[in-house]
Length: 66
Image (cartoon, rainbow, N blue to C red; front, side):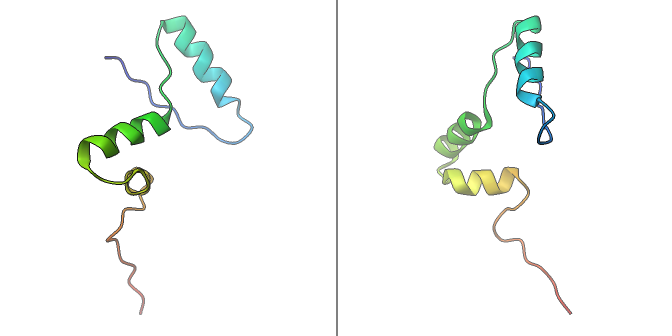
């Protein structure tokens, strides 16, 4: 399976770029919500936990202050 992951900035027309690229390459766009849902179902985690982990905000991470 070919996978191209894209991030985008607000106003950068990333959705248009992704749609054009997918059409040109004959690929299907899969939105992150579907991926998070599938990971949650397979692991038994909540979708919120999966989302936080994928965004780098996994629970259990502590901040150290002095």
